[in-house]
Each structure stands twice: as C-alpha cells, then as structure tokens.
Image (cartoon, rainbow, N blue to C red; front, side):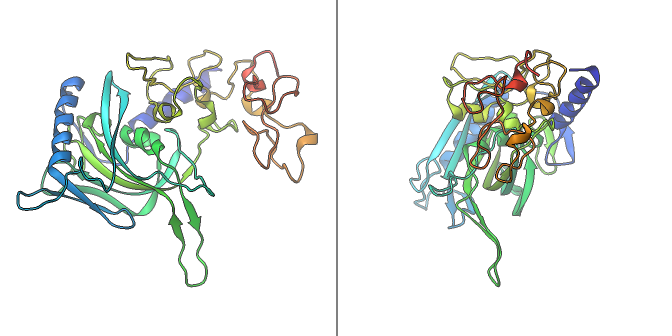
Length: 345
C-alpha cells in the first residue's frame, strides 16, 4: 500500500475516533481508569437496586426511585424483563456492562440484520444521567442515522446484540411504520461514554443510560473497495460470534486474548502493512487494487446477476462469490479469495 493511502488512512481514522454525537465537549484531568470504573460500577449497581423501570407497548421507558411506601420491584429483580450483563475490554479494563434486551429484533420469516461496530444504524433513543435532577440530556424520538465509530464506544459494543426489524411503506392514509425492531436499554460506565470530557449537560465521569430502538442499518465499506467492512474483520470459528460483534474497533492491529478468553481486536491485516483490510485498497499487497481483483468475468454478468463485482459470499441473487485463484472455487467458505492471495492477480 503506497504512502498517500497510508496518510489518508491515518487522518481518516483519527477523525473517526475524535468524533462523537455531541459537538461541544469540555476536557478535565484524567482519572485512573481502574479506579474510576470501580466508582462507576458501584453507582450503576446502586441505581439498578434502588430504581424501577416502566415501559409501554412501544418500549418507551421511564425510571423512578423506589420509595419505602411502594412495592415496586427494582430493575435487577423485575421479571417483566431480563437484566443482562456482558464484558467489554477497553483501556486495559474488562468493563461489566448491564443491558436489557426487550426484543432482539427480526422474526423467523424476516430475521433482520445485525450491525457490526463499524456500520451505520438508524435508531431512536433517549439518553439520561444516573445522577442529578435534570437527568435527560438527549432524545431522538424520530429515528436518526449514526455511524457507530463516531458515537460513544458503549454503543458499538451493545447495539450489535440487536437486529433490525421490518419496514412497511406508507399506503393511502396509513403512515409508514417499523415493526419487530430491536429494542433495549444500556447502562454505560463513563469509560465507555464521555469519561473525562463533559458534553452539553453531561458532566465528566458520568455513568449514563440509553434506551433505544434499532430500526435499520447500512453495512459500510470504509475503503470503497467493494467489500463490506463487516466481511473484512478477523474471523475464527472457535470464537463466539457474539464476542466478534462486540470487539473494539479502536484498538491496535495486534490480536489479543486476555485471561478471560475475551478477544478485543477486530482488524484483519492480510499483507501486514499496518493498515487494516477495511481501510486498505490493496488487501494482499500485490500492487493490484482489491476492487480490480473482484471484477466478474464477463460471462458471469447476467440480467439475473447484474453486479460488476463478485460479492464476498454468494447470495440468493449472486450465486458466485469472490473466487479463489484460477476462478475455480466461488463458494467454499474456506477458499482463499483472490484479493487476499498475493500470488494471484
């Protein structure tokens, strides 16, 4: 990969990391991550034990304090929903993150789509603080689009546990609607939110809560090589796909496993040039653009299969995926696709 591409990659990646969903931030001194996480987790645990949650048929939620004179069940003990937790590795900390999955999303007939950490999502949401009197700091009742790499990292770890639903277009007097969408709540420690930055009415080191609904997504192609970034991530059949969805896109290219067996890096760098495939226009370093190596043979471009490039994997409308060298194997999951084979152009 030549120098100009590397420069563009570094610039673009730094911009993506620096971006967030709020334009005004204020930085304070940096606390020790482990110490702050201990404080945040204690506050979240206390909140979950001392507050109750209500929700309506459309999964709009509200939180309130349990009073001695009431018989409300705490968020932890309420059987109307299941409080779950997962471990997220970031900044040298294995964060315990609580979340609620009202509905994963999709149906048997329409299983929906699951985002990865590098995709764009169409969501409605409400953000609130764990502490304070004016707790709500943001709300989008009308769905908005977010790139998961440009919002707080907690989103990129939790949203991939959910799927999109179905969209019904407007017809006559019936408005457009979404159904069977993923819906949930996440409780984020500050290390997966704004940490030592204040954003708007959010103070530094504030644990926060988001309720959300995942309506739609767009699988992104960061380097424009015709291969979706979700297909340019590291894969290993021995590793739980759920962990793969939650991996951290901001860490180094090295592949790590911690003492708990948690894998925290997503990047695949086939040619070892220090640029991940999802940002590399020449994935195997053979000086042939990936986009050129995935072009179809003329005979394979038909009205039924109109794409000019082979898809990464076969689909119902495109029965041939990117082939192995020699254009012999188009479908085997273990084939060495030609754009990843430096001996094949």
